[in-house]
Every structure is written in structure tokens, then in C-alpha cells.
Image 1 (cartoon, rainbow, N blue to C red):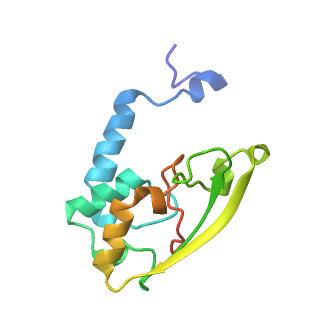
Image 2 (image 1 turned 180 degrees about the vertical axis):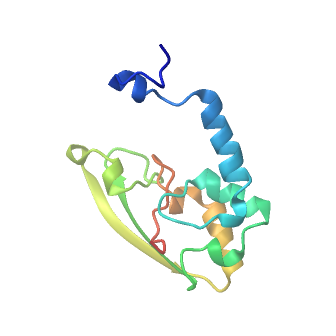
Image 3 (image 1 turned 90 degrees about the horizontal axis):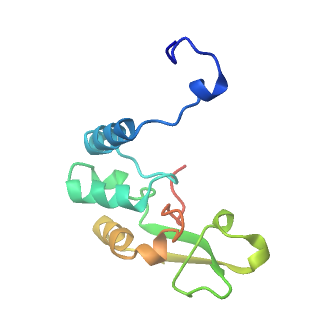
Amino acid sequence: MGTSSCRINVCLRQAPALRSLAFYTVFHFTNNLSEFTLTNRTLYQQYVCAVESNIVPDDRMIPSTSLHLQCTFVWVKGCDIRKRFHKACVNPSGGYWYTYTEEYFATIDEVIARLCNDKDEWWCDLCNKPLFKTTE
């Protein structure tokens, strides 16, 4: 009996195969770069790939049309001060400091360069998603 006719939860909820995941990654992220938009779910690696492709227009590589980045994050007590996290990514019982920073830039190229080159400042060290406000 094949899994297509089986109605047991285990058969219906099987994890995707490695081949399927690789296919999705290669064809979804690599071939659909023309549809890339920076969101709060964008991973740092996806962002760098989009920047290096030179396919994505600059206006979709920054959070909004302004040249202003706002970053809200937490520092975890006892952890390296250079590591920044989302509040949801840390254990609240461990203790943390909630903080905020912002920066203004002169050009879109400066914003993109900072987001690519300063991962520790603008991206969560645990989940690799943006700490800055996006258009979502």
C-alpha cells in the first residue's frame, strides 16, 4: 500500500526529502531573485546572495524608501557584547538588556553595504533574521 492511499498521520506528515529541500533552495532562491523583497523573514545569507546577484533592484534591498535604519535587539547577560538577538530568540529567565539603535545614511549603496558587511550589528546572531524594522 503506497503512502498516497494511507491516511495515518505519520504517513501524511512525513518530513520532506533532502532532494526536495535542495531543489526548493536552488530553484526558489537562485532562480527567483528577480522577485526578492527584504522582509522580516529574510535570512542574512539570502540577503547577501541577492546583493551579489546584481539582479535585485536597490529599492528592494533596503527596508523602506528612507535611508534610515532602526534596530531593536537584546544583549544577553554573560554573552559576548557583540552578539545581538531578537527578544523572542533568548530565554527570558537568563536575563537580558533590551536596547535600541538607529542610523542615517547618505545613499542606498551605504545602507546595502552596512547590511552586508556588519552582520553582527544588523542581524540576529541566533536566527540570522533582521533586527531592523522592515516594510512588513
